[in-house]
Length: 409
Image 1 (cartoon, rainbow, N blue to C red):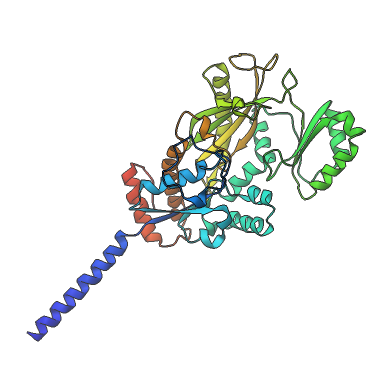
Image 2 (cartoon, rainbow, N blue to C red; image 1 turned 120 degrees about the vertical axis):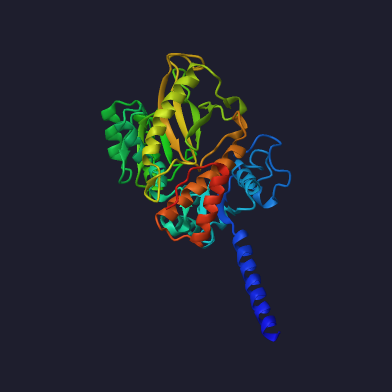
């Protein structure tokens, strides 16, 4: 009888231990870090979650109070709570230590260029380490990230591919005023623009004007520009490109999500108000800019990688410049001139306010799928991932639920 009781206790103990073990496995979740920090890229009015966390509102201004990056991250939390934990990481909290606690990380805004704009040296150094440290398991990874941020890299590739761009002289070893003026005169440009071509956006690090002025009354401006940007290596020298009426050229910004063209937004060259931004209407301009953007996107797909393997980027914005043959208006014209002005990766404005769809909703679903693809690549490459066996099972389970054919070795 005593022996039977001991046996029963042993069996019961084993059963409890087995149940606890199964319980732990059943409660395992994939941890996806999502880095956010915009205060200027709002979602459509009244489409933000009803209980939007105060700590994610970085401005009281309506224009950015509910930014699309934070809204996307919150929507991701709602999708598969039984299998996924979303770690929303503000840019000020983006560190190697924080990222390495997650199985995979995405950044929707914080990156090295953003850190440089903040002027925070510690943040700049930390972000640089993050992007170069594969153990941070961050997407975008370094080489593709640098290909986009270092404009000289993608512009050279576009030129080789025969894709129209603004004529450009590229400097990769700093800016020299004498060389600049020599090249401008050689090209015969009456007006020119020079801008920093690496880790720079929102028009920072740029100067423009008449060539004769920089040879005379504005010579000191060009010298001051050289001193102000002495730490930069990459510069792009271009003719100052205008429409026939003298205004800066317009752009149609084409957005690709998870490999598919999704929408385009017209942006006026000089009107920064609502009148200068709107969903690109149907017509020949939309057709032409979309076609050119899709050619550019093929070059993006040739370059984008994760763990050394081709990886479709989560989001790209491809800006197509537009110059009408006459006047200022290019809408519904068939004789416009088009060129690729810029390629942007995910850390850019998504312009949800002017899109025909709910961008945050679309991006939330695409981001989960994208994260599974990244995890599969890391697991297949034997990259160090915390709790790899459980991660593999969770990836397989969620992939099956979503009907995805993700291969796991």
